Image 1 (cartoon, helix red, strand yellow):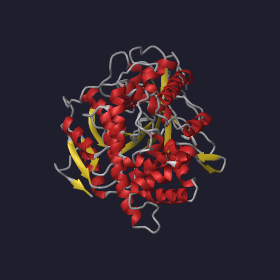
Image 2 (cartoon, one colour; image 1 turned 90 degrees about the vertical axis):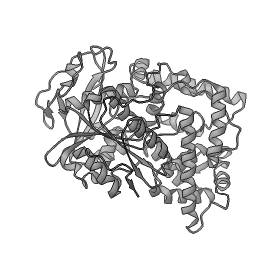
Image 3 (tube, one colour; image 1 turned 120 degrees about the horizontal axis):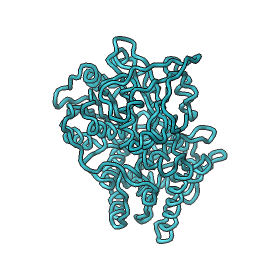
Length: 520
């Protein structure tokens, strides 16, 4: 999922210098070395042809949600891929990438790598969660399903670490809604301190933070492709994962077999324009939720739904609601709402949560916010939030023009009035302005030179990556657009037969759907 940036809306084996050594027989471990395959860059041969040690996935779980995802799956296996910390220094420090595999049941074409977006989401957990729907398609016969945790994320080591669980809980209660000069100064001081904590809490410090952007993830993917024995890459990227797929295709066009990009990040917009477009997308999704809500008994949103929502949520700024030994903050209520607007399946929970809030309770909204931020019942958080910030800070240009920030903050409030907290627009610098590592992301528009036609899927009512983003990406990559008419974020392998049939056929046969194909 593409997560809301906090710049305008307050939502808020380890590395070594040794060479890769082939393993020896161990109980419960299966060693395989099908690579190297396809193109191998000079100087990286030992990585591209490394042996993989497949084993039970339980030791790879890092959170309650991943333990549940892997614990219920007896037919998956996991391994660690070793890659350079810095690809310009292949003989220097190394890190590892966590990888999960669900094997093909028939005549195998190769591997299908997936990334669920974020940035910061676990590809291993997402792959495990997709298996039941994956089995319903012919993909399960023809491809090993491969989920990987991008560098710094989840089971990959070292992981990005900025805040402890208690610090993250406290941060959720620290609203930073004061847009006075003093409030802006305080917020910027906190953002600077956060950047410093990320460098201090992450192994290899600034060097790790400098080398975990999309530029480096696509290089890890190419190593993984080869180590799995695939001469060319088949890939499924959701949301921010479309950015990974796009950059992989530009970096390694000769290694592309078939890429499905679902819920595209718009390649034609800068950060601020993209954020305002996203705000408008969530407003449209909120409006659709309101229509659905009003058809139910006792919908808590009145004639002016935006005002009704604000009346329910803004009192939390001054007085959070007690939920056991915790509190539901204004930030959490907004996060919970955003989480629910990603999919119509979550609308009933949002309705329950707003109805509870009307009666001074907050358990359901807090649970939704916890799910979005990946907090378990013991107060442990996954790496998703810290990794999201860390990748964003090296992928995207720094936002330091306060006039531009202030103008965008105004446009944001206009585009999503249901999220207006009632305070004047502000222009505090985010943590990226103080980041201890340089920007490494590409800023030029993508080019389709040497890339075979790809499949881009875009949903008309997508709140997080609006429909036009997919239109623009397909055009930029000279690729085929498949339109889904619905209100949700991403759609492939989520139960729509029309979309699934078209994308499965493309991945297996490399046959694109007819130009102008629409599903509903």
